[in-house]
Image 1 (spheres, one colour):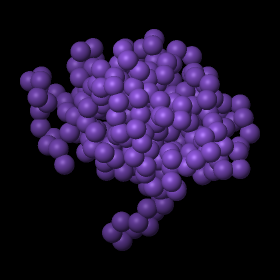
Image 2 (cartoon, rainbow, N blue to C red):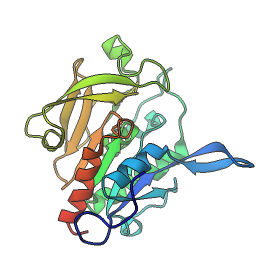
Image 3 (spheres, one colour):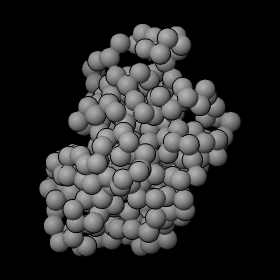
Image 4 (tube, helix red, strand yellow):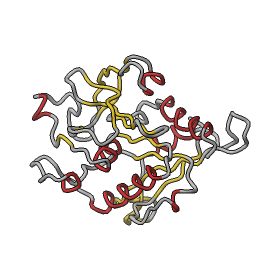
Length: 245
């Protein structure tokens, strides 16, 4: 795990990067309780990128003033977004809905956008960003592509090549193409306001977006934390320093 010492820029302060969590029944030590949890991979990759990760509980009262202590934000992956959030009925394969988490992350994303907080949405996080901005989702990608290449089975990752759009912020960070770890059965359908496509899979599935009206807001449909891919998170951390938040 990365050190918690000073950042390499010499400023003496590591930018505070909030990462969303979710409520799950959790066993540890002598306890079996509901807890706010997050995969350690997110903590490790944010720390390795030079940030100070702070776990954010799923509370729905986030406002512009209450995100002021953050220098950046990561919307983590997880359960399907409730289709009611983008005006649709649930598909038979849409499940494990978490209204508490939706409420918290929609409020958090809106607050972050209001103050132009540098942000990365990971998998579900990208879908939350899209829905907050008025976009919609494909609720079951195999219905469109005829294949399960983006999620071989629930809880499994697939290594998929993606093509990055020339001139995009993401292409500047990762180059023209990448092989990424995917585990999603949903994806962006109609883009939210201000979002542009930054990467696609071979079957045309949107795999990354950028917000043209923001200084640094990206969404990726894959899981960079799974691959210990630091470059995206380092770009987030570096952008907080440039903006002197």
